[in-house]
Image (cartoon, rainbow, N blue to C red; front, side, top):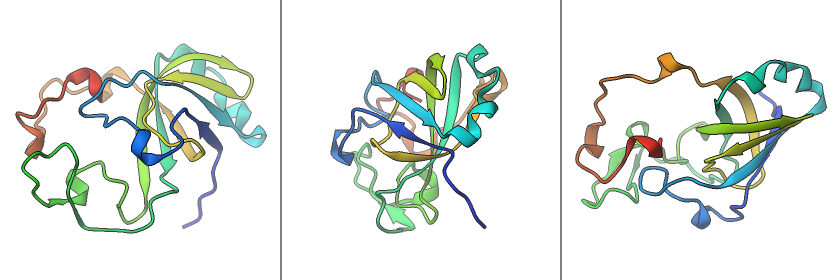
Length: 151
């Protein structure tokens, strides 16, 4: 398998500790998603969407763990990494749903980002109404202080 970045994400979060926990804090940060010149043509028509899914490589993740202790879990239980959004996954792939403010050339200006500055961008997908399910189960997060707006 070979993948190469199509861009890079520029955010105000210079360290992992500064990134808000998407399940417990309102995501307000504005960021710039820079798409590399070879891929700019792929941005055609993207400005018609209100939200995008950014598929990224969590480049600062240094290890892999199959069980993790999520910071939002006040029970302190070890959880399977695939039941969390931890960066400690085998392939360090992440998804961030953001609100698209505007497109200027090869830059997407977005709100609500939860990524580290310099995160490599793997792909962009439009966030569609059918991506929102009306009835979902949230597993071990049931009863935690999370809201629908938090992603």
